[in-house]
Every structure is written in structure tokens, then in C-alpha cells.
Length: 140
Image (cartoon, rainbow, N blue to C red; front, side, top):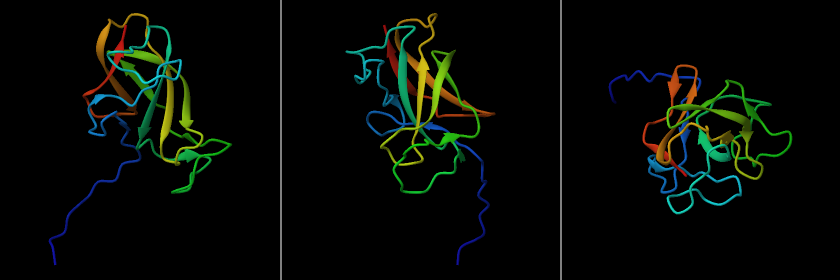
């Protein structure tokens, strides 16, 4: 027998998927043209980027574990903010990604025009909780 352990339960704990699956470094982010974002292929300011996240909580309609997302696509109940380089990005879509397993949230966000070029941070916020620091996107 082991000692009792208290485990906190939270409604959301957002996390961004990364290219190397480590949870940090370049995010698993697509540029507006569908190409993989990276230092060799940065996103332009003002363009859309596509991010993929997990831990975004309950959806409407409710999702089913293990099922591929299909129409109507479930969307997180709690709104998500995206910060790119510390600036708030305009999120134009947040919901399941068609063809991916339910539980993966797709976010389409516009790279803020006032973000400096280079490798910049990307953070998701839901209420008071934020995704892990250290995920980045390349911006030209």
C-alpha cells in the first residue's frame, strides 16, 4: 500500500504540441500556406498560423475519446487566448481539427503586426492557466 496522495483536478491545462514532441522548441505550427513553420520557413506578420494544442477542456458538442473529429467539430467551452511574442493574436478559429482525434484542438491565429522578427514565444491562456513556456514560432 502507498500513502494517500492528493491530486488536483483542473478544468483545463493547455499545452502546445511541438515539432520534436518535447514540449518546448518550435511548435507543431503550420504557416498560412500549409507549410511547416521553422527558421527556414518563417510566418509573415499579419498572416494566419495554425497551432495544435491539448488539455483545452470540455467541448461543445461533447467529444468522445478515441474518435476522429467530424462535423459538427467540437470546440472548447472555455475561450483560448494566443500570445505570440508577448502580443495578443487574433484567434479566428478554435476547435477540433477534422480528421485528427478528438482532444486535439486546432487554433488559427493571426501573427500580430507588431511582433519582432525571429524566434518568438507562443503561449496559450485559458482563464488563469497558461501553456508551458518555451514553445516558439519563427516570424519574418
